[in-house]
Amino acid sequence: MAARRLPPGESAEGALPPAGDGAPSLHVTLLLQAALAAAGRGDERRVAALLDQAEAAAAVGGGFGRASVEAARVVAEAAVGDVQAATVRHERLVCGEQWGWLPPEHRAAYLLDVARVHALAGDMVRAGRALLDAERTAHSEVHDRPAVRDLVATVARYAAAPAGLARLAATLRV
Image 1 (tube, rainbow, N blue to C red):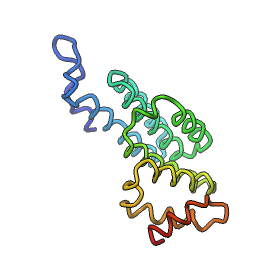
Image 2 (cartoon, helix red, strand yellow; image 1 turned 45 degrees about the horizontal axis):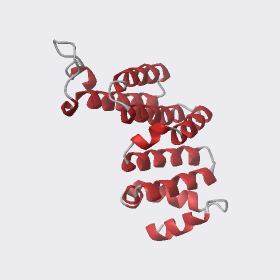
Image 3 (cartoon, one colour; image 1 turned 45 degrees about the vertical axis):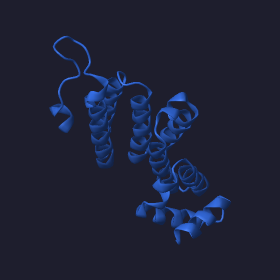
Image 4 (spheres, rainbow, N blue to C red; image 1 turned 60 degrees about the vertical axis):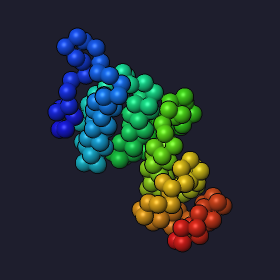
C-alpha cells in the first residue's frame, strides 16, 4: 500500500515533519482511499483497521483530518450496508464543529456521497436535500460532475423530492 511507502511521521529528533511537508495529510488521504476501496469489497475488518490508522494519523493534523476520517467512516459504513449507523454518524458530523474544518468542495463531494447513500436506501427526500445542500455548499461540485446528473434525475422523479430539486434537474437538463 502506498501509505506504507511514505516517510515515517517522526524525524530522528522525534518531532513531526514541518507543516508544509504534507506527509501526514497525504498519509491520511491514502489510508482513507484504501479504507473506501476495502469497503467497496465488503472487507469490514480491513475498513475498520485502516480507518483507525487514519484517525491516529489525523490526530496530529487537527480538525480537517479528523473531519475527513469521520466523513470516510460514513461512506464506508454505508458501503458495507450499515446505513443506519452511517446516517447517525452523518448527522453528528454535520452538526459538529469538525464540519467547518472541511473545505467547501470536500463538504459538497461528501454530501453527494451521502445523497447516493440515501437514494440507495430509498429515502429520496433526504437524498434530494443532500443534493441541494451540496449545490449550495459548492455549486461547481454538482454542476461539473457528469455522474451527479444521473443521481439528480433519479431523485427528481419521486413526488416527495424537495421542490428545489426540480429546478436543479432543469438547470442540469436531466
